[in-house]
Length: 299
Image (tube, rainbow, N blue to C red):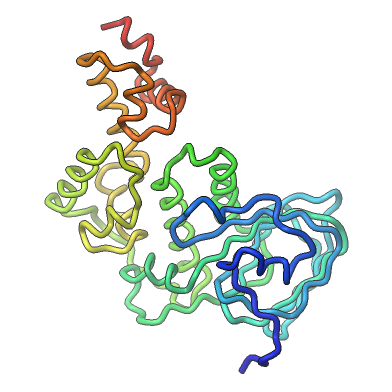
């Protein structure tokens, strides 16, 4: 039972983080309206975290420092003291007592999300009815490190990659956590993709809504699956992650419009859900091999 006077952090409350850290984060997804996950990027001098627990699950991804910090971690009255390495990851589930001390300035990412977000992403990946995330002291985890910094890069780029891209990164994180950081590590591994009728429903919806900022949960709901499970089956069926497939469809539609309409490249970009003309141009050249301007001249 947690003491009533213990420090409780709610990462859904913007200023609650200042109860824990001496300074505000350098970067935060508070205003980005991400679905179910929050990112903060921190830089702090040597500091002792008070004993606390948070209302959300928390992932800490250790980044750079002038020299590798010596960090003392406490999780549920167990202790670890070690020199942190670039890309080490700590997992602190919701309502778990924890604290830490580091001896030099360093930078790190925190990812926080509700237990219900974890459950929503993973409910049909396992037969367990109550999935428990287990705490983990800092250790290397290249996949979480890569996903965390991909999310950070997306936040820094002001959302060029779309909501569906954020959702796909989140789904990959949730599946990895279920597989490696949960009490229920035996998960369903699909042997096939979506049924043809399911796939066609999703493809039809995508093509009818290319101008929309589509969400992974929105696509998954069409076939009544969790976002993570749907993402796995969709890639098995098409060879592409959902966000990659949507970009391919948008570029294919852009080719049609460049051939058949008098719209400008910028107008086509906005009509297909790209954030700006250069966003379309970058993906168009990557997938077609030439820029939209060169493509028009070749027709």
